Length: 391
Image 1 (tube, rainbow, N blue to C red):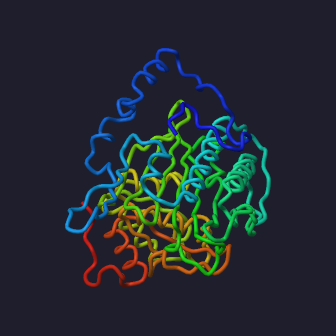
Image 2: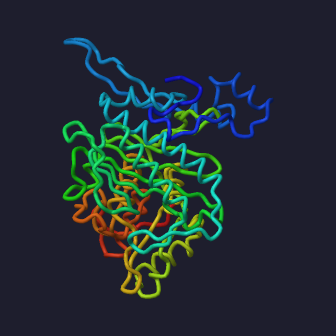
């Protein structure tokens, strides 16, 4: 679809509004440069040789392989997905979720968060915009027609969305991760994972067919990974309401940037305290917002760094494997990075209950090796001497 504003099939999801507060001169410039959006958001996005994903197939016996699809920077979300996967049911679900993310972004920008709070079924305080995001995502999944079950961190029971088991999907999501920092105007986001069929327990993160996050910051982005497509792909919400493909990430390199969550655990976890001391001593740059979505997203965008959230006897695990850890694990690992609970990839962990929680680290290979060696004395990724500091 190449229409100016994408309209969701259920008209209640996305208000059909005019452009928000663009000046006439800027609007004319954007319209006249619609084929050159990189002029506004960075020419390097279009010119980078890493910014294309290809899928090839043999065209016949004795003939060389040829490209049958090509996902390019500048594609709309629909164009990208049509090239990236033959599964039309999955395409419809992911497009429907994109419409919900667009509406949530608008609501987050315009929400009044002063003192209006609710409580979810876990007893965590949540702001009113959490409830709205939760409702919008359930509605999007219901009207996609291909979601069988959905489950939310705020409503941690399976909800029947009416879709088929065969050819359908089950989706778990955190509607607004970081809701406690909405009122301070920090970046927050949505996380979701997509599993085939009708099961969200007894499965692993590696069984996901797709995972994504919506990031609501100075820009609104939709970061998406498909199990059978290389890379993790970023889409930017343009002024006219269209998602445009602006970046691919296929490699997480080494770099001195760290985001240390749950630092209170250092008081009675000496190994975690040792790891944090190492980052400080080696002059790593601290980049921590208090929101898991922006902290993990920066690893993908910057293509370097380490995020940690470690437990201790007095600081128990808070991050939920189904709603947060596994989907972000797929995004990071498809981007060329690694994940760990200290001993294994989080994508290998079997999700036994909807509320299962875990510690986690995401980052480059060497940083995950260091994380595992420091906390547990060895790493499944590399045996031998401890690593030197990243360059």
